[in-house]
Image (cartoon, rainbow, N blue to C red):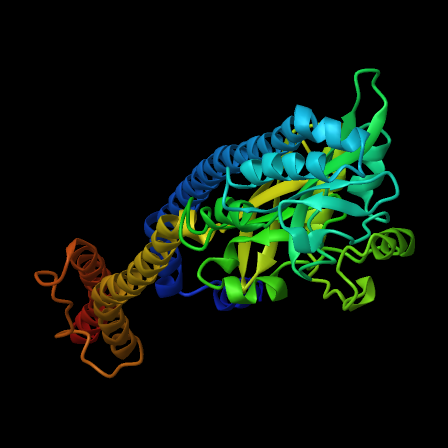
Length: 431
């Protein structure tokens, strides 16, 4: 009874154990495929991290370079208007705004300044009441700009660089630079201002289209997060006004009221009409950069179905931010290709492991099963014990050893079986 219980227990254990073929297949996968998968994953991850670091370094360098170029441009234009404000002919006219002779001399000086760069649209003198009284373009005269920040700041004695705003004269976006015109005693007599189109700044931003890799693009943001220039205007200047003035986050009511009072977007468009194109991670990065006082910060965001990596850099002349970003796949494409290659390699490795496992187990299991069938035939009496044998000359080492063991077992069975028969026959004969 105890023997039967043990036999049943052994049969239960055998039923629960995985098959020999499955164990061989798992072993081949663990030994042959798993190390490749682990090594490939670690290698690809390391390569991707290195390529991403390279991308960020390139973006940071280019972003800082373009931000510096914009800073230098702004400083140069501000220096020009300060030169105008310090020109003797302009100072003399500001001291006596009713003298036509002085006005003509001041206009000649302003025309000379306007001719220095193609982006200069107008150079003008604004009286203390905020009205343009003399300009390199006579049609500008008589226009009131008393609500503009550039006038208010310069009248208070401080040079000023405006954010891009729609001109009340041309109804097109422009930059305004202003400086106080003072007499020898330091008294502010009037204000000198220039109106400059955005072409030169757009040129700097557009130059970054594809500068650090396929798909790289730049944008210039003001201190409210409104796009002032984007590299997408390259070759599409006719669509510039539809591409710029898109905030990266919603503008609060107080800021909107201030921008509206300054007629930042002209008389034909209100702040409420601006299309918000949100980039939350960039807004968060810029806020953190300003609060910490660092000069640049990196960020990531999803766009166009792929991840973008970028660097935001602060300007020094204005509270503007220059942003340069690139699809990270531009740099990690080789790692992505390696990932695909590794997957293909793993699939091939798995397929080979299955094939080798099947062939290996078949070469082992099939001969053993033939031996089992032969042993079963002997055990149930299907073959004559006298003539039964197992071929111990064919098959592999294991098969031959098992066949030899079965033959030895048969010899033992014959000995005991036929020895008893011989003894019985001998006893019958003696009787």
